[in-house]
Image (tube, rainbow, N blue to C red; front, side):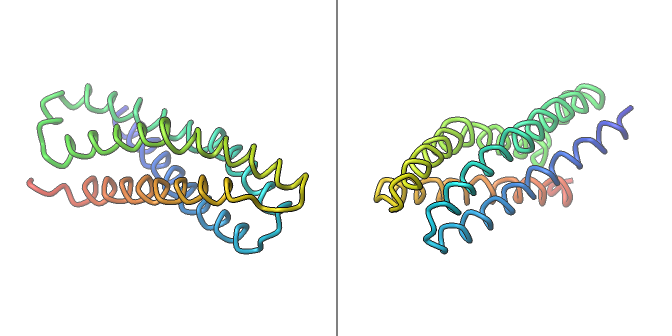
Amino acid sequence: MFSILLLFHVLASIIFIGNNITGAFWKVRADKTGNVDIISNSAKALLRADYQFTLPSLIVLFVTGVWMGGLSGWERFQEIWLGSSFVLLVITVLIWVVVLSPRLRTLVRIATDCAETGKLSEGYTAVSRTWSIWGGVVTLLPIVILILMVLKPGL
């Protein structure tokens, strides 16, 4: 059972990290075009990808991680690499829920309005900058978690 949970846990982490990196890549490319239709469509696709990939992978990461913790003994969370990874994942989820997801919905709304007028607004640029900064944090933290999970420092 533990091996199956671990498999799903690893797959969810690949999907989560991959979706973060890929989403950022396509958003930057869309923004660089300056084409409001491309920017609007990209923002909508990013939001869809969040609901189809990011959210499910986060749920699987939490469920499988906690389940494996229960199977292997809760005292394992006292190990620095595992406890730190869990705290970093909680921080990642909080940033995603409180900052990124709402900003992305705002970006979609603004970009859709901009596509109707044909001009990119300063409002889009400001929200996009905030989304990009926090998106970088939410991409970096899971990479740190991955390093901790693989190297297991302190063992």
